[in-house]
Image (cartoon, rainbow, N blue to C red; front, side, top):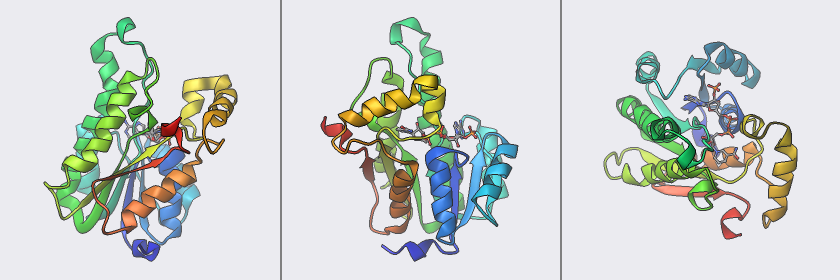
Length: 241
Ligand SMILES: NC(=O)c1ccc[n+]([C@@H]2O[C@H](COP(=O)([O-])OP(=O)(O)OC[C@H]3O[C@@H](n4cnc5c(N)ncnc54)[C@H](OP(=O)(O)O)[C@@H]3O)[C@@H](O)[C@H]2O)c1
């Protein structure tokens, strides 16, 4: 594996304005890739791209919206590598909520990712790759987060089921454990630090992951031309406890 392989390659980050996607955008940029950074909010993408560095291209993308996905790929030259960070976490008890409402989280991660794949396949260079995002809830479900567990498991399975259909492209997934990103601001609010500190105590390595550590796995999957159909877990041993 040679990280210099990213030099001059175009790398699209679906959900590059924050957390793991942003860390991946920074890493790819530092390795000489031509980075396309997306947010649902174009102005946010513009601001974030400017922070990441010169030449980073900001674009609008909402993977829930087919027109947005198609419009993005129509406006781009062929790309080499795509990382789909986009996806939200739904924590809501099954019996208290309408199924259709709950399944929006599942649809975003799975149908949204498939929308990106459908639009990308004709526009991705041979030898390119698509990396999906799963998560610890595949293996360690928590009460009320069944939607997320279904979604992450399916996103990880996407990395396997598409390999035979499109063998000229590699498909992989990262599966983050608890990772210190702005995602937790929204979910935990003021309790964020306390909850993440308590989670860290339960992990074999006694720390939650940094977004840069998950990004490093994404970059590894982009650069290693012999890995396809793989899921890399960055969970500090969280699946073992
Ligand atoms: N942090 C963790 O502990 C953890 C653990 C397991 C899995 N994950 C997964 O890892 C991924 C990245 O998480 P993160 O922690 O980095 O979260 P984050 O900081 O909240 O970042 C989420 C990113 O996804 C974008 N996004 C959200 N919904 C989107 C949509 N419908 N279409 C396009 N872009 C969308 C956001 O962009 P805008 O808001 O600017 O549109 C943002 O750039 C997510 O799929 C998350 O579920 C995270």
